[in-house]
Image (cartoon, rainbow, N blue to C red; front, side, top):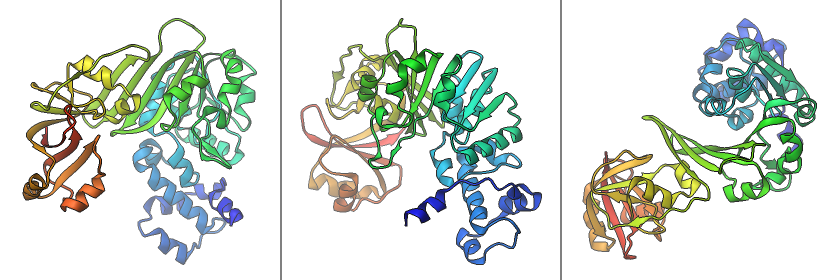
Length: 400
């Protein structure tokens, strides 16, 4: 069973797939994958499995990697690699954080980050230990016209120690053979904490991408010389944490929260060790829910202080004001405030379809929907939460 699993996700680089005939087939295929799997392929030197891999991975890339999707002659690795790579949006953001002339990406993978780094740097070195994946990235860089990227099929950590770079970039593997998902940098590959001093001796800036599951306090306990931590969300979903490390000891640690929303970039930043004091209030005219990046940062007191908002409860993380303000998150007008009771919930059933959210409330969204027969949809938003006087309440809101 293990061998079968390895076979499914093994990476191959079959150049026969790049023929015009097969590329057109992949691009124009519109039937189900199961149909292709049953029917098989009549192409010589290309297996059905390889065709399916290209079609599935290209479909995965359509929204995440639109440049790759729209470019001619792109070769795709298994869809698992596409799922794990940076999106174009997050790669562009990371590229905006660097400066200098030379960068080495020691965990290059499919090459999305390296490509966008090459737009900012004079020379980029892309290292990838899997030879087939390195060959795929090399081919795609040529198709995309990225002529200033040098590719190396080998251990990036070793190559990073052979010369000095302006920037070293690392995206450690977040999988472990026995532990599954890991939550400590020392469990990742490469082991950044173990090699940190040597890495910083070979660069001016060390840029580190980690899973959003990593606790910021845990990461800081394993690292030193951290200047910035960027919490990057897309459409209100945290995608990655970006750690900026420098040899320069000046300046305090800054936490920068970024949410790439449809309406534009939502940014909020604060010093990690700075103290802030929230003010508290009963619900007023407007309600505010911080975006996912801010929620990850834990800046619950800072948000209240910075925007002059009243917090509903120390554990509720919802905010309120009398006048409407710009805010890095969702904004609502409060139409009604009701104590949570059987009578009031029956009355709310007259609203029809509603959106349901909870903050510091003893029941889940699913349990509330089931108990009170609340169907999803409509224009009303119900926030089930706890007020500053410890009473359980329901806020009937509309988006503004």
